[in-house]
Length: 355
Image (tube, rainbow, N blue to C red):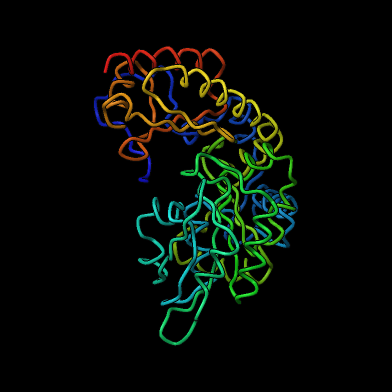
């Protein structure tokens, strides 16, 4: 699977943008909270809004410490840089974001190799960790870190069950490896499953949450872990240019999102289910039942590829993601209401009929 392919220049006007939940925009109330934020020098630890956000996320995730970063990709890469040394190996699912969508950063920045694991729905199990760690010796790279992505994007937004997360983390510890959770859509997972965020993150040495997807903030992610881990990670934050100044303006948007946009993720999941049900009635489309807010469907039954279908959809004003030769993704988020879903079903059906 590839990363989502954006529309080209000169694309038709978008009526319903289902390309990604990264297209979410801050509400007027969030903008007002950002404008009113109490700010200071974040790099020096003097920004009260950033400090409040980090303390709150650390508490939510059951970790002693946290730090604010501009993006989730930076969270992933700083975690890898902190946990690993050049020449080490990281275990992750073959479709994980660190493999498919971060520009080869683990190799380019940390000098580590990512060993891909297989499994249904973008997940692997404890046995896969044990198999990959078998016969360690001086002829192989040191297997240092296990990464899980919650939810699994290319796995259709699937939620890792708590028992599997705990078992994978235990298997990693048994092999002397650290654990890292890419929590880009962790709150989607907790809302869908009813599992507390701290319980979901309990077995994982580092974990981050994103605020720029379903939570609607314009910038920001928070990486959490032990006090020592965050102290060490700060040096990488400094090296990579992630240290900021009056970042409280951005942190205030994230705090607003925690107060107002977490529970409502259930609405996105409901709308994704309605979208999937509508698309399942379109001849030629094979639709996967969404676990959260990501709807994947296969278009080979139409006799075209995903790029061709996305182009036809764009002509009708609906933006979707190309996720593979025949795989298309549509994403719901707080800017997409019930009327937009019904419009998208009609327009995507018309796009399919025109092929």
